[in-house]
Structures are given as structure tokens and as C-alpha cells.
Length: 305
Ligand code: FDA
Image (cartoon, rainbow, N blue to C red; front, side):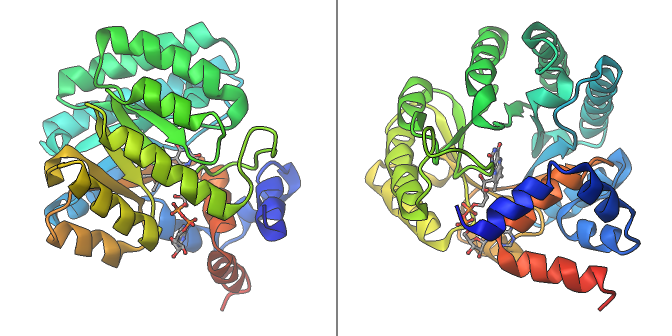
């Protein structure tokens, strides 16, 4: 992994850096590029605008690695409120939610995370929409897939995320090719024992995994901003005789919005991942780590320029 990326991901776990960034007066401006505000109301505003422009949305209430049951419960309540309002505003047709199990208690007790995720899935079903379980670092993959298997018993439309950088992922794609699966490269600092560290190897694995998902009976969701992978996915989808509504592209809020618009205009389904909430720090650091230009943008803002 490139040293700058490792450094930023290490800073993501450092409390002193976290405090410095969170209290810097200009941080909020930088955060606004990638995060749709701190409240449900601001998230719904952003969602409404995206939907008006023909995009679909998946909403993420920010938070991760919760070791406090009270905070896990507040996260669940925020999702329940959000889902209610998505239903009431009619946005649930085009907007679903993404959930990190570590935000609803996974590190305390897998059973608690399952119960909490079940409550969110039940509310999503009632509101007319779906849930996708985000995938976190590799130490949580088995647990997340176990919870997913349980959720599939009652809510088979629950989506999974698989990360192309993990060596295990091709097998996981084969196992889940009949489900809704978001394929991404992977955003965490992972050791070479479990993950491809050469970006070219990650891309090759992404294409192998895309082929498996496109040849399955499920609904693949290709989460990438990489122009080459977007092109290859379109080409492979044609080989596999997939119509535009048989799969979707996904991108992050604030990243390559013109590409999101271009793909939509071409008739593709494009879903934007929209994070919101007060706990934006870990999310922001992963976005900065992905692209040196974002770090420059961030540092210029911190310096007030
Ligand atoms: P790559 O990082 O190679 O970028 C390709 C090009 O895209 C860059 O050259 C640049 O032009 C542009 N770009 C990419 N990131 C950018 C950024 N932050 N700012 C500006 N430009 C950028 N990961 C994970 O581990 N678990 C998960 O659950 C998810 N969920 C998820 C959902 C969705 C909808 C997306 C799009 C991504 C995720 N990810 C994720 C993150 C994912 O694993 C990955 O870290 C990022 O998408 C960046 O990888 P790319 O495929 O875009 O390629």
C-alpha cells in the first residue's frame, strides 16, 4: 500500500489527530464535500436533489466501532427515523440504507448486531425499501457474512458488500452470486496475508469477481469510480446479456458527480452512497486516503486557503 495512504489510515485511528481535525474550524467545509450534513433532514434534502436528477441513493448514518450499547441503540433509532421519513416523503422508492454492523454492536456481541440489523431490515421492508450491509476490515468479514445469512432467511433482498482486495472474495462472490452484492475494491489497510496489495492485482480480481456476479442470478452493484473498471463492467454486462436494469453502478457522494450524470444519461442505473451524521471522521479519512488530491484539498482548507 502506498505510504501516504497507510499514514492517513493510521491517523484515522489516532485520537489526537481525530480531536485536531474535528475541532479545526474549517473541517466542516471540507466534510460537506463528502458528507450530506449531520441531520436526517439534511440527508433527505440531498437525497431529494439526487433523485430529481435521476440517481438512486443509499444512505449511511455515520458511525463505526461502537463499544457502547447506548450508542448502538441510538444508531438503530436514527435508522428507524430515517426509514420512516423515506417512506413518508416517497423517497423510499429510490433510496435504501447502508448499515455498518460495527455501528450497531458487532464488536460487543454478534447477536446484538443481528438483532439490531433485523430491526432495521424490518423497518426497511415496511417502508418499501432495502438494506445493504457495508463490509469493514477483514477481521469482521466472517461475522458479517454470518449475520447476512441469518438476515437472508427473513429479508432475502438484504445486500452484501464484497471487497476485491481480499484474497477470499472470489469464493465469496461464488457463494453470493444469487443475491444483491455490492462489489468494491476495499477501503481498509489490510495485510498482504489476506489482501492483494498491488493495485493491478486488485483490479484483476475485481474483474474476475464482476464476471462471477454477472453470470449469477442475483443483482450486482458495481461500486467504483475507476473509469477502466466502469468500462469493463459495461462490456462484460453485454457479454452476459444483462439489461441496464439487471445491475447498477454505485459511487460515493461528492466523487465524480459528472460521471454519475453521464452514466445515468446513458440509461444505466447509478446509486450514490450518501453518508450523514456527526461521526464523519473515520469516513472522511478513508476518502482522503484514496486520493492524494483530496489530501491537498483538505490541507489547503485547514490552512484557510
Ligand atoms: P480507485 O481508488 O482506484 O479510484 C479510481 C479513480 O476514481 C481515481 O483515480 C479518482 O479519479 C476517482 N476517485 C476514487 N476515490 C476518490 C475520492 N475519494 N475522491 C475523489 N476521487 C476519487 N469499501 C469498503 O471497504 N467497504 C464498503 O462497504 C464500501 N462501500 C462502498 C460503497 C460505495 C457506493 C462505493 C463507491 C465505495 C465503497 N467502498 C467500500 C470504498 C471502496 O472500497 C474504495 O475504497 C473506493 O470506492 C475507491 O475505489 P475505486 O474503485 O473508486 O478506485
